[in-house]
Image (cartoon, rainbow, N blue to C red):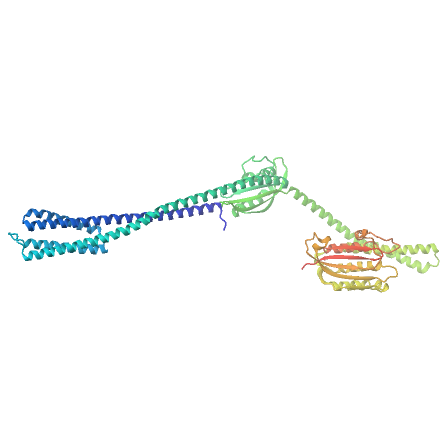
Length: 592
């Protein structure tokens, strides 16, 4: 997926924000872990301190208790009562320091119970002390019991101290790991930040270089566009859809007949140049353009300030730039010359149509009016030969023979001209046709000449082709008839017809054709042949290589062949060797 610069910036900003949030979350979690570790250390220290104070206060209470037992002096009870008070405070602070539902809370509960037992023993021993300070057996028992209770309290304190030490050690390990991780984390953040900065710099530098190259290309492109506009007599314009603003190129101003930037581009200003008769139609197209943001090809006239009328045509296409801003870019072309050429072509087409009508009239005259007096001449000559031949002098008979020969050539010429004029290309006349059938029909047309000259005609199997049937048949008649006509004296004509498929790129005369495959039909004879220098001239209308007295003909037959092949978008070539024979090669398109 290709990102536009705008989307790229959005994506980069989103990724950067996500990375910052991740770094912030990780940092917060790390600081919270350090804070918790610090709290654990502080709590452990406080618990240990209170436990030490409890032991100290117990010892103080025990010292006061022992002094009172020995002296019965109440002054020794002051340390005792002071220790009791402080112990209560110590236990109260421990109660707030030790979390609920932990092993330490169980130890604290047992410690409280053992301390209560110890003070219970203290109270019992006070009742057993007599005035003579004589230790009774009960007192000794109580003192022994008190010692055991004190040992248990010390054990409880040791257990709690050990547990706090373990917690302290675990917290210290955790804290050390966190402290070890902190430099790595901040170093990683620093590296990541540097990478992001380097990537941003590389991207900005790349964009700047691309922008510079683009600007350079735009400068060159602008100059080329200006030159192209001058050569093509066109101008460009841009409609910025969101801002409803227009830009005109310098040559568009020139098309309007004014200096570049002589007015602020706008629809209203442009409409002012449009011919009055074209404003309504163009206005409808412009309203459609504003609504649909599209401008199909439109033509209209403008009137330049000097009164010159120009024919213009315009076209617009909507695009979106890299920042998803809609722009309708358009081209306006001066079509005045094109319009004038069209009018000229239209006039010439009318002239051509008149000429075609005149040619049709000429064909009619040729086929009817000219042939009628020719028939009368031939009829009267025939009557003259029948009735008065014996009465004519030798010179008169010679003149009659010349008139007969001239009238026969005249009839042949008229027939050939009619045939040539009717050999036109009509798309509707093309049809899939078996070429073998056309060849056989042509041979039947020439059967008298073939039998007279004992000609031998051989041919390969020809394919079915999309052709104008009667024209291809005439093509075969003319070429085979030509071979029969120009056969060598005393040598029976041999005519060989071959077919193959060829590729245009392999044939010099077809290398520029856009059609790839062709049919190649070659017709070779053993007649009198011709010099190769005349290979192209024999297809020219009325061109003859031999005198009228040597061989009959009008010089139109092969010209008709070329016209037929041209009608089929093909090529016809001729090859000849004097007294050896001639070869005609026909290339017709093979549309697979």
